[in-house]
Each structure stands twice: as C-alpha cells, then as structure tokens.
Amino acid sequence: MSSRTVGIIGVVVLLAVFGALGGVWLMFVQPMFDQYKQDERTRQSLEETLDKLRETFAGYKPELMLDLWQRSLQPWRDAREERAKYFNLADWTKYEGQPEEGRMKKFWYFDEINRIVKEFYEKVYAKRGNYNAFPKNPLDMFNTPGQQQYQTRDITDKEIADNLSELTFGLKMCEFLLEHNVTQVNDMVLWPAWISKDHAEILGMKTVGIECVMTMRDLAKLMDDMRTADRYFSVNAIKITYPYIAYNVEPQLNISMIVSQANYLKRKVEQSEKAAAPAAGGPAGPGMPPGVAGRPQVQQAPVEEPSAVSKAWKWFKNNVLYIH
Image (cartoon, rainbow, N blue to C red; front, side):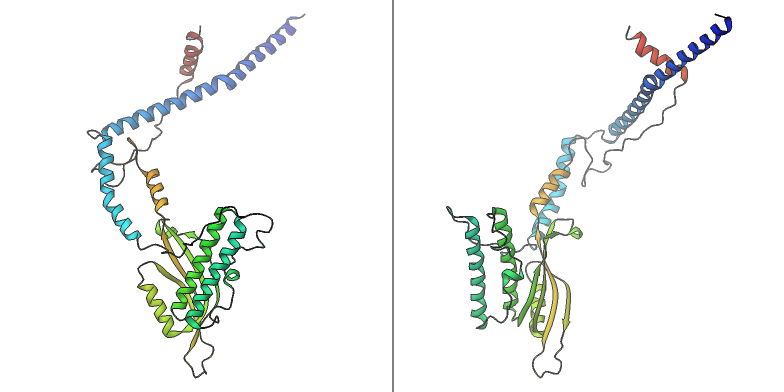
C-alpha cells in the first residue's frame, strides 16, 4: 500500500471521526447547552421576581390582606344581591305536578300538558266568553313536544322539566296579554334562553316574539305596566301597523314586538367568585391596601451567551468529572 493511499485513508478516517463528533455534538451536547441556557434564564427571572415580591409585600401578611379584600367586597355584594331581586321570572316557569309512580312518565306528561292547556282555555273563556283571542293551539304555537316526539321512547325527567317550564312561561305571557285586553294573539315564539353579555353574564334572558292585535289604549297600558313592574321587562323591538284606517271603530293595531325578561343567575355568580378569589401570594384584588399591586409578571432577563470554551468546560465538568 502506497503512502498516498495511506494518507487518503487517514484523511477519510479523520473526517469520519470529526463527522461523528459533530453528530454527537448536534444530537446530544447542543441540546444540553440549550437547556442549560434556558434554565439560567429561568433562574434569573425567578430571582428577579422573588426580589420584587419581597419588596412589594414587605410588612404585609397574606391572610390579613385577603381578609381586608373580602371585607371591602361585602358592601358591593350586598348591593348586588339587593338589586338582583329585580331580575326574576316570578312564577312564570313554575309548574305543578310530578310524574306518578308506577306509570310511564310520557303518558303522565301527555295528560299534564293537556291539563295545563285546558286550564288556560278555561281562564280565557271566563275572561272573554269565547276563545277567539287565541286561535292557535298553544302546544303548536310553542312547539311543545308531544306524542309524536316520544312514540318510540320514554321521556326523561330533564325533558319534562324543560318542556313544562317553557309551556308554562308561554301561557303566562298569554295570560299577561289577556289581562291587558289583547284582542287576538296571532302567533308567539319562545326564543331559547340566553345569557346577556352586556350584564357581565350574570343575567339569564327569556325572550318572546309576539304578533297580536289590540287597541292603542290597551297597548299604552301594557307598555306602562311593563315599565313600572317590580321586575325586569324590556321591549327590544316593536312594529305597529293599522291597515283599517277607514273603519269607523276604535283602531285595532297590528303589533309585532319582542319582549325580554331577565333572571339573576345566583349560582353562576357564586361559582365565578370562588374561581376568582385570590389565594395567598396570588394577585391582589380590589380593596387591597395602597401600594399592594398584583403579582408582577415574570420577565425573561437577558443572559449573556456563554463562549465556546465555557460551554466545553461545563459539558466536561457535568458529564465527565461528576460522572466518573
């Protein structure tokens, strides 16, 4: 073998060794250096944050601050609970009767919805002497599930509660209009319950779309009674038309309107307060002593990039000296 061949083989071997070392560096050594650099940044950030916390909360006891925070919120809570009484649905979603034992729930439910509607029509007849004010069957008007929906299965307790609550609410609105001498209710649509984002999501809304006929005198009385009621009513939109202007009778107005009521979500508020209550060492809330701010944000402090020699020495120290 000539010296040239030996030289070529040596160069190849040397390149292979350097290549292997480079691969080891990229696969094992470099990630360790990156992790070390990240750990160093985290350490410096934590030390800086700890110093700020010691300076900010010097002389304060967390339990005393929490107690003060809770006491400062209590007047606001009391005022909120007092005002919350205005936002309720009264008895408009409450229904009587419970499924009978030993009987399939759906058959009891069918009898119950028919009983509720029958009692409503009795009230209408007692008030008017006829049923002309409500030409549509309330079960159809409110899309109350009936026998067709439960032909192949029994009804659940939740479905009973939801369906009867919706039906009761719709009929209560019909009775409310009947008390204000509505001439005829052509249609009424119950919107799905929704939560008002304009009120910090603590009010559950029940909205109804109404198409009816009544006189201006009765409409004005209806609007005034909703405005002065001891609970929340809101007319979100209203449209009034009168196509029979030539008739020599008291005007019967065609009215389309959207009416909303609100219910205070006490359970949701309590859950939100529990989730937002600060723990010891946590962010400060409203009412904290002056100068006590929230927890400072952890900032990533810049760290000087170690030199190649420093990196090599740290790796040698951690992986060779300490291991062997």
